[in-house]
Image 1: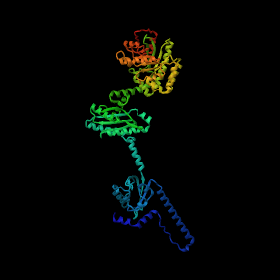
Image 2: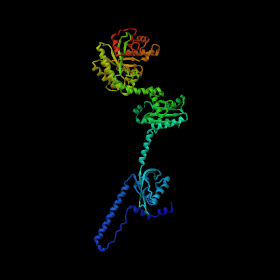
Image 3: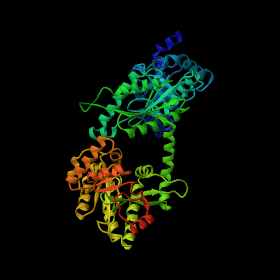
Image 4: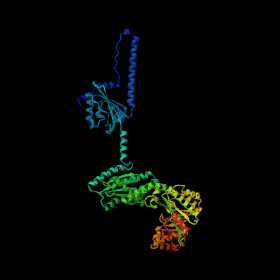
Amino acid sequence: MTASNSRHHRDPERLKENRREFSGAPVLKVSKTPLTDGIDSRDAGMEEVELVRRQYLESEQRFRALLESLPKVAVQGYDRDRRVIYWNEGSTRLYGYTAEEAQGELLEDLIIPAFMRDEVIQAHSAWIKEGVDIPADELELKHKTGELISVFSQHLMLNEHTDSPLMFCVDVDLSDQKRAHRDLEFATHFDRLTHLPNRQTFEVDLDSQLDSCRRQDNGLATIYLDIDHFVEINDALGYDQGDSLLVELTRRLRECKRVTDLVSRVSSDEFVLAFPGVHSAPDVRRVVRHVQNVFREPFVLDGRERQVTACLGVALFPENGESSRELIRNADVAKNRAKLEGRGAVRLFQQKLHDDLVRQHHLSARLEEALDNGEFSLHYQPQVAAASGRIENLEALLRWEPAEGPTISPAEFIPLAERSGLIHRLGDWVIEEACRQQVKWRAKGFHEHRIDINVSGRQLVRPDALKNFEDSLQRHGLFPRDIGIELTENVLIEADETVLEDLRRLYHRGFRIAIDDFGTGYSSLSYLKHFPVTALKIDRSFIHDAPTQPKDRAIMEGAIFIGHRLGLEVVAEGVENAEQLSLLREMHCDLVQGFFFYRPMPAKEIDSLLGSFVPSHEGLSS
């Protein structure tokens, strides 16, 4: 402290003078008038002086009240030596000092951080001596505790160019805004729950890592991780337990990563990881095991240990992509293919996966247009009596024949229709077309052959699906013996009670309800006694090798035996040769269906076939 500063600090009269000057109590000079002017004149003058004084004091009180009523605005007054002469309640809230503590103290000793001290003193001196204003600015000033506080500070000089200039600082607290900005900045780059980088940040970090890999001629593996059945965890245990799983998984992933490895949470239950230094197949297997080991120990959820798995998709640099976006996309493609294979599956990206995905996207976009343009048709494959070769029924099979290009397999477009929701419109079309064709055949005298149509599980999600089926038959004047339905066993097991009730109603009305692809679903026979079915269709996979494979033969024989004991009709699919047919006849299978007899045919060819059918014990050809 300089001698001058010390002198002013100890000069209470000067501080009082400055405070009095700020208080605004003016010295009013009243001229003396002769007594001869009269008592009335003197009284009037005194009243005028008192009125002006009272108005001034009221104005000052209002100004002080205004300053004190601003909760987020700190106002301080300083004399020419930067000593406090005024300190409002807002300053106390913002900086922690009471007015009594601050009074007479130096500005730089109270709220100026050490790194700003010299700059503030010089700026104040330049204003007083040279008239250089201090510009308004965002600053970080010091709280009594030493913590830095963000403020927007403005400065005002009174009594400028006099011996007693006064500087007033008006500081607005920016803490909330700064905190909100930091929160927004964090949310922009990081995941709120796990504090891992989000996808945007991960892409930037991965591109930087790829630049390093190029310089060092290094490989890199990107792994896309998707927790199996995470939705079920949320639904069954609640979101808190789901969040707990994600936090614990994050902890494990962080513990096992190297400094150069990257980890990110990119969506609800999906993480992406990057491992530089991967050059060969053994390296890939090593990093995959590295990630899988994270799931080796069970997770504690809702107080119980639960085993959790995840599907992994792997994309390699540079083989499967040169940029972060390419690698993440291709690892995601591989992960989606892995999910089709079941829990804990791993798939390495192959270009064919991407090509298939692009083709499926293209086909999905064309599906509705194809339906509008009449590119779909029904083919019919006869089911014949195993013993006689007589045509008993016809299965309707959907075909897509684009105006340009080759025919597209149902195995390709039916899943697309189910995912897009177009399966409902497509299913309605199949029902209408089968009914229309059956009416035509009935009119031609073909009364003995039922048409069976396939109904997918996705169709039954719509509550009125089976009711619409019945309405279509009624509208065309058809009966239960004219049109039947086929469902896979998985569809039956997953059906809710409303669907089962509708099926029971159809069953009691005499409709034929068959379980298609029998033996490939849950492989549980207990449901057969509970569900309303009239027939079993043994999947072709058991028929194909039955003549040479004892296990397949045993399964086929057991299915036929069980079906008959339950009073069900049994149909064998995929019969392609005489050996298979002979075996099925030996087992007393009711009906057979396959290329050994007939391929699926358009309606016109079925017309000719039904009109000229001649039964044969050796099989027929169309």
